[in-house]
Length: 492
Image (cartoon, one colour):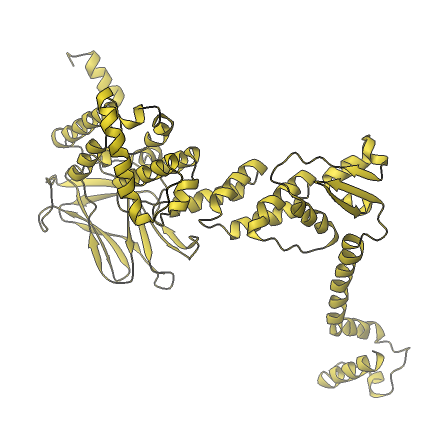
């Protein structure tokens, strides 16, 4: 090692002669005044073997002390397994540190029986958790992460808990998202729970799956359907259709088939029950089987379903939704139309985030590849015929009145406003967002046939297929207090 060091240092001296001392021109002496500096250089030059030694030490500790149990001073028994361990290593665990340092009877025992109350913990997970006390790095497989997390939480191993959380966030997919979300709720990993919610909001409608529909609980589906961030494809009617398929799979979990067959099977299943329920003059959500799903369907934005004739007819035919809900919505929409026509409601005047999030129309579109696109979302939007164009990396909104034909009446008011939020996203093969951009909440004012650029896209960031999601509010919120005052004071 000494000769190697001398050769390396002499090479370094030749490369950097400026400022070198005379001792480097003659045979090295142990009294050389440069020795302190040279020792640092040797250490830097030879640091690779030292790192290898540290790694081998870690492996030696893991193999000798943990796997072989040499010089063990305590035996841990759990789940019909035994581990010969060491108190000094176990004290890294908050669970054992409290046990050994407190007044527990186990503090003086050499054999400890540990009760495992959590059914998620198995012997393999305990093996990984105990082993993590003897090594720096732990390989966690996605299939084992929930069990290991459960063990880490019981043993209060903060580092392992954090590593489990990172593994979960990196491996969220259609196969893992529901299990991860449930585990995150149980073990208090809010960041994982939020990441799972975000994944579901992005993928529930854009990448529908029979497997996912079966696993989604009523509580989780309610949270998704009520969210303004649900990425909808194409319009709100598609949310209703997805709920119908999901409810069928919740009621008939043994059904096995493809996603293409699912809607046909669901319609046939509900049709058979509709014939029976008609005799009692009730809808499916009002019967015993349907009642548990009421909280989810309550969050459908029915005003944007009944605004399209074909969709309204399907809703009436299916007879899933209580008649009272629909009657109330028909009345509300009729008064909104009258306000637009007779009170000259020009649309939202200011950004009310709560109003937009709870009442906006959710719609979306998938652009499979780059190109030129122009479309409108179906339904009656109180005379505002909105055309959306994607061309030359621009997204443009246009208020159409006279130039292009459209279905339904068109408002000829000189000016109309819309409140909106536009979001673009691209996903990898696991459904994780790899490109995301949003306009934030805005209000735009349009004259007749006016168009406005709402987003200019950086071509370097665009990845296809590209998903475009929009929230729209075409009318201003009704002033309920004023309306109630007019009803109670007819003379006004």
